[in-house]
Amino acid sequence: MTSAQAQARYPLTQGVNPWLVTVSVMLPTFMEVLDTAIASVALPYIAGSLSATNSEATWVLTSYLVANAVILPASNWFARRFGRKRFLLTCVVIFTIASFFCGAAPSLSVILLARILQGAGGGALQPLSQSILLESFPPAERSLSMAAYGLGIVVAPVLGPTLGGWLTDTFSWRYAFYINIPVGILAVLLIARFVHDPPYIRHAKVGAFDNIGFGLLIVWTGCLQVVLDKGQEDDWFSALWVRWAVAALILALIGWIWRSWSNPRGLVDLHVLKNRNFRTGCFLIALLGMCIYITITILPLYYQEVLGYTAFTAGLVVGPRGIGSIIGSPVIGILGSRLDNRKLLSAGFIGFGLCALFFGTVNLEIGPYTLLLPITLTGFALSFVFVPLATMTTSTLSREEMGNATGLFNMLRNIGGSVGIAMATTALIRRAALHQTNLGANLPPSSAILQQKSAAMAAYLGRHLGYAQGRPGALGTLYRLLGQQSALLAYVDVFRWTALLAFFCAAAVWLFRKPPRHSAPPPGAH
Image 1 (tube, one colour):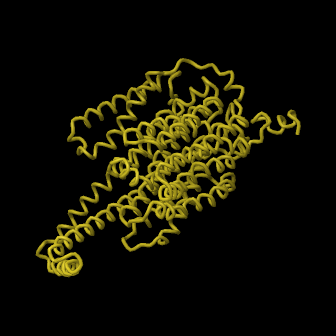
Image 2 (tube, helix red, strand yellow; image 1 turned 60 degrees about the vertical axis):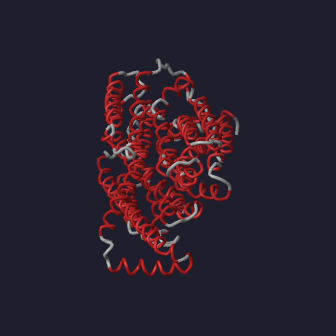
Image 3 (spheres, helix red, strand yellow; image 1 turned 90 degrees about the vertical axis):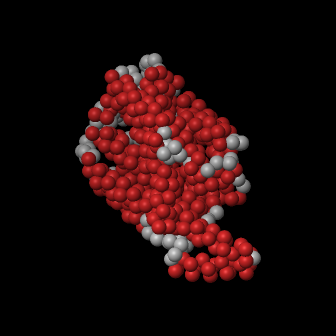
């Protein structure tokens, strides 16, 4: 095929087959989203290696998400100022280098700094990839292109725990970050070869960078995450610093909203929220971020912390979600152009909620295959959520609005995920303490059953450890069982709350206004 024939056949991608563009931009997206979840099963190992608690280890996830969210709204300006291709390549390079420093980190503070840099480098990868894909295919084929994009977004976080667990158990948790290096190099080579900037990007007139808006965004997102991560340790508003941080959060958020609304050349153009479908999509993507990241984070922790599984075994148990997502993505690519996406969205959220409810029935006797079906169905249901949600959210936007809109859309998903992880971590600590108090209240020292069981256990341990160690050993074992049961009930609570959130989302999807099925594309769209 000559250059002129290729240009005529694929005018939107300047003669490059759009599926080659899809592979090129999906690879860094897959890598970036994978890295969000790949460390989830390694958190206990990271905590032990760096002398941190499990609660502090979750900062490895949340610090990444917040840094990721901060750079997302600015991605449109950087893409227009420096060129989308050049900016995308720079982000992949930064992300890859930061991955090395994450793996080589000697302390918690160093890995958090490296994760912030990594999140900043990876923040623009998703909106850039999404906008490139949306502009590489005609409107009639966007559902199919978003299905391919969904493979990177949906499959990566559910395959991450399995891969991360295998790397952690086989080598070290550090290789969960080192694995990004060869993937990043391949992504740079493909992007340099197949991705090109459209004319309106190459000739775009870009104003000055909105330093005030960017600074306010950093302040309110940073305060939000610090409060969510550290507030639990200092009993929330009983600590003076928490009150000051919340005050700074509120003031910075109000200032950022006012700046973004009143300044047409600001970092983010919030006027796009006037679009009903986009406004609804932003609301739902934040809630979806909470649902998916809560599940991705706490399910592997449940298997490791409560049931005592290894990292690889825990990752392997939750791995079937990836199979469900792989099956669901091509199905939704076909159905997305034939059925009302609101029905698909509602079905996906309901399916996810039912699976979360089933997770809420776990006990200490479950085996590795007990949750096989609901875990697989969770991945399948997520395929029915993400792709229609992205399609419906951007269905009534013009081409020129895509960059700004996708940055804001993905920022809210990451903030929702970060808030969800912090809330789930806090709920696990608080609810476990509450359940332990309630269970302990029903086990008074005068209880005949308690005395009988402890005496039998003391006699058994006394024969093996010595008489002097029998009684203390029995009481210690009983206390450990009490803590294990309390932790189990806390996980059950979080799973059930996640199910309620998913059911709420299933109803909220009907706030979308259905776009005309065969209408012309919006002004300015290809």
